[in-house]
Length: 338
Ligand SMILES: *Cc1c(COP(=O)(O)O)cnc(C)c1O
Image 1 (tube, rainbow, N blue to C red):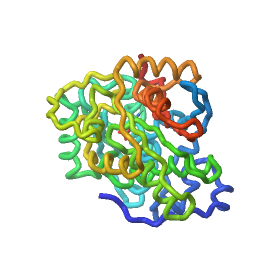
Image 2: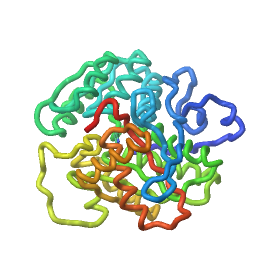
Image 3: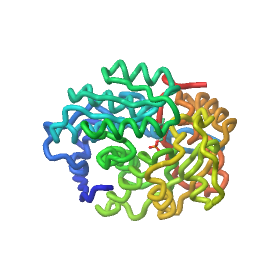
């Protein structure tokens, strides 16, 4: 399900507001400002760096308050939950989405319970606990945590980052910021990692909003990067049809995109195709090398986020020299690293 909502961009008003994603207030569907639950997220730096012989602009979303772009979705979702008078919410996440929702639930004074698969990364679990959320560890494959959360959602608000449409009404602001930071122009290409597609679909919605408002003339190419070890979207995009055996523990360091069955798979592939983009897959060694390359540029990011750098290495040689490429750095290296 998605929301139909006509976003507006009063550019002069926006220019005078705080450097936070709520500067696009008229583009985020919330009735009353009093319900905004914010930690000052968004408006992250767009920083130029030369990589693989090309100038690329890096959107530093690992600098968001809980350390990943998921704060964009969480601020919108927690604000809506507050507006609806929700007292308790549940979510299943193996990492950053859980951290982000726990942070904004704490800020909103909403009780929060997170279902995580056994074996999720230690630093992220510690962070979720620090925000005061209740952690439930669910044995078995990742899917089991989803089933447990859905069951709990019979008596609580299901704050699912991959399903709940309000989450996407927050992640879409990454497109607004990139556009504003480029002087209200769209880049030619946006490169992101993709697992459940909350960032990619958010960016798609955001650029579509800007196009509908007459601010940009066309959608940027969306180039999405998966880990080759867990690449259902890559396979769907390339129309690789043979069955892949289900693996209970997907062996990739890019844990944030190890999503075997993305609920919005068809929507993601469709969005990428609509923009003339593509879906790439990077192997474990490529991701590890890309992570080291990122460090040498001064970006300390988590392995999942490094998939984007690995994607750039594949993508750049296929493009024209003048292409304006923006790549999103999605998560901080301080909670997961090699
Ligand atoms: C969640 C996450 C992703 C992938 O985002 P999706 O919305 O699942 O596509 C990428 N990088 C990091 C660091 C993440 O936490």
